[in-house]
Picture 1 (cartoon, rainbow, N blue to C red):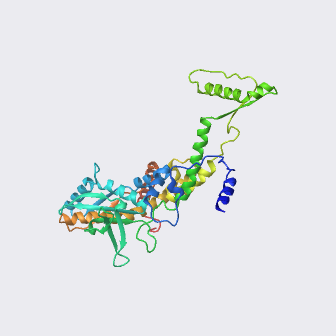
Picture 2 (cartoon, one colour):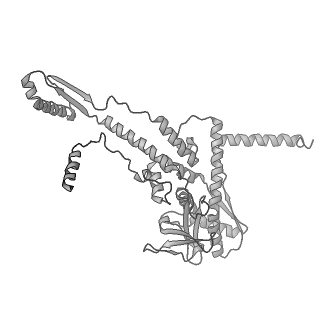
Picture 3 (cartoon, rainbow, N blue to C red):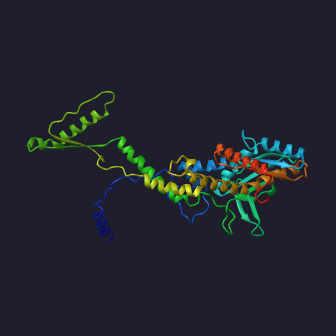
Length: 386
């Protein structure tokens, strides 16, 4: 019975369907295998930034637009000491200054939703600021839901709580209720990016075929009996001569054939589909999620001048929100440094103004304000005073 069953299966398997096209997949398979219910995946977000350049550009521009800040203290000596520390502190390698540390910290926060850093001390001052790799860090709840225990990899794959949690810098972005880890700004983009990459990969495949044309050479024998008998040999000869003609470089060769020979480019009658509309629709979703105006990313979409101003104002509010997320980390660094140095004064962090407007228009607006104040002072007060 089993033998007969095998024979029947073998007979059915004699008819094999051949694939019409090769399976084409883009190199970032982690995007196509993304599950919305999946857990926090750092490799996915790294691949997302590498696969779609506009996402990486938007994150880097947001980091640069965060701007700089100044620390001010009631004690002038402490203020000078603190500012010197912030401008010269070692953050690893050849990088110095807290701006370099905050840039990496903020980039990590945007990409993964969680950023971890550490202050290294010698007991008297902060010697280094270190950006930690999230794969070496684990977060868990403490004795209460509001307490977070930070654990580090001890080298054996086991995580143990850090010895000095007060030296660890932690920031999470928009955590979901009841969750410890933050939410990446790239959340919701893997599916859209996967479709976009499929379009780009298809475009590359089609242009590769157009640039490296394949030909179909067909030889039709005549009614002559001898011609039909040697049809295969003559077809092979025609194919060989055509190959030699196409492979010749630097010289022009003619192809001469006798009989009914037809040559066609494979796929020449199939036009490349227009990808402008679907690509723009996908890019609109990406830009809307990242919150960067299109003109800052080099996208020449039709927009009005007023719309550009509104987009700039929205981005300014986004930067103010991110500054509020980063300021507690800066406060913790400054407070630790001042206490280690023996200062007991208070300090303030003052961020530089965020503006994306034209400098000339700002100057003109200030000029109008000055003229208004001058006129009001000349007439002796405001309308209400009169």
